[in-house]
Image: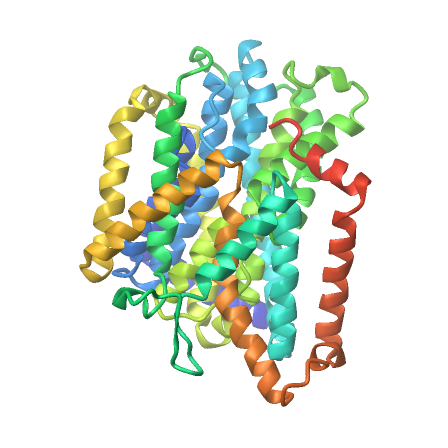
Length: 500
């Protein structure tokens, strides 16, 4: 009965005119940035962070969530029709989706993608409903030592699940932790790494870092790549799949949903990892692996279901524990902090309208996305005719205006420029930005919980081993570190992104 009461509260919040409007706006923006290559959800949410400061908390978070899972829908449309993924998690959909379109099955591919995404999104939201409350109750039993150990586990897991070099991922985490130290020490009042710059006494603002690292750097990299189409636009005739296609797509979508739901919860996981892992799994268990890359319907259904399921379940650790599982969730944590909300188990107890309103809006948003995507296919494809050289200056201007509006300070605009250059350097060095952002977000919290644990134990570090929860988390962290050293694990980690 309590669950039904909570869902009733959530839908009463989500069905207000204001929240429905922002959910629709988020879904439209998400689809748009999913369609357009070179503008991902991370960059878009980073640019919109300053705007959320002026919006009601629930409405702003509903909009940002809609952008996140909406991008997963939009990316599939152009992947199938023009062989041009608008979003990283849609890269794998090109492999078979575009081949299905060339074989005259574009409509079927789009329908399977949309329906599979809707089913996976619905299941992912249901998982949040079922597991959020038990996890929140468990999190309320956590002490400072337990939280510190949990964050250590999250950072190690983020390193393992990040694509690319493990060494570079570790370096990025530590760099993020170092940047998180900038500012005034809460306990001693001493200034750390401020270099006598008064604006840094309160630390480095999260929004300029996010906008520079993902927004500005993304623009420069995409302009350098000279984004062009890799195939011609294909006309869509019938949207109805055949019975054979349905028979093959349903089990693949189910497997993709389950795999994506599990990977979305893990720190460092998310839609991209879910999509590539689901495609790899389908190819390995298929009786005819040679058909993949030639228009296999399983190659569309599984990754599309996986990336949407992962997009939904990645909200679980963020909402219940305050631990972001990927770069977008780190931005969502930043948005909550901007609104004066402390992410973690207290969100459910102190702000149930926000918590359950967000969850209810995900169901509504997934329904909106099916309606937005299939009937408006022609409009989304036409947007690809807009040259990127026109989009780039608009994005740059938007970033600068957003940064300046935070505190009406040009210092924030300069911060955006500096972190834009840093983000470009990261790309050139093959370093992923997500571990840096997770280190930046978790670092100050980890330091605070470590100090609290030391104060309560009167300086005894054994408190981390004496508490069962902390001990279990540290043992898991140690096992993950050992796994990193195994050659077989390194090979499996590379294979997860082999198609990329």
